[in-house]
Length: 400
Image 1: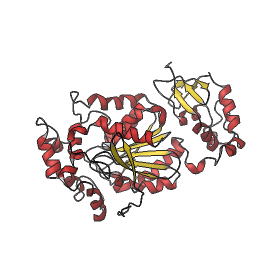
Image 2: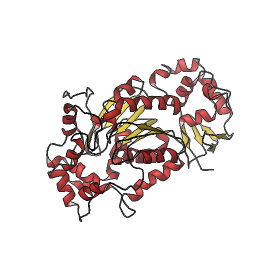
Image 3: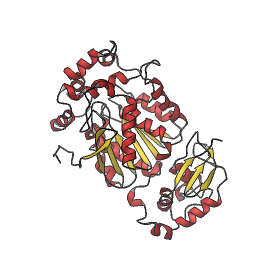
Image 4: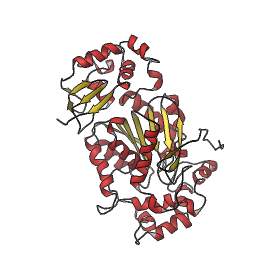
């Protein structure tokens, strides 16, 4: 393994649909899939991974095709938003990740959020950082320089590939990318993957994917993200930074207020790449969100074996869940649902608004901290409720 500045993680590779993808895979416990954007790579998450792993979570951070240590096709035409989503989806399936939390920033936002809305039964929580979820206006200078306004977008490609102007703007000083001082050795790592014009096709392609109006090929594909988030009752943490010149705090607050189960955290004195400027702060807020608000139990909170869990009362909790099947329950946001038991699965009545693990447990009163609830509280506490639900899938059924 090549030694890199502040990047002590093992290099992992997987062949996904003909593309060799690099990814970081650290820790054990509930998986967190962390997707970078333009023009960075998994190096951007290096400050967040250690505290999340220490808190009992598994962190998987892929390098998108064309970025980091992943393959870099030279043909810009192969870089599409849907292709990036397909490859991230393929990696999640290759690693057999279950019950994931997604994290996305910049283009990593719509990429991993498209995975999430298309695989809702495999997602427990969403973390949204400085990104877009709808057709979005972009700064005028950026549009003039990098948007494909001249037919094939040859001028834009020339600026990004030959002159390397995009990376010069984002990684030079503290103008656009960062708000706080960054070690020169870290800047060198950010620049490392794209030394020549033929390695920068992925960078040149991204600006042309931005849907600024309904006529753009990606307009509907991205608009569906916001439409789904508006009605999906899943725990969402939105964190935007105050010094980002692309995505505003106002937009972050709007997203958090728009979703049924959202909360907002402003990251102060941080630029567009807030993971670099404030990675530890973001990770700390994520740990509290996952453990206390989203109900995503860390590895150390779970029993070491099913026998230990059964001894603590998991079997009795399951019996009570079975007994109350068919009754009507309500999430904290007022979404009513019923459920049936089918083998090892809990099938809810809400296909239009899937119920997550945490929402199900809270609605049924399985957490003592939330009061007695419908089932009188958990015999073994939240730890053992999660051991139980981790062994069973909660599936959406027919809409009411």
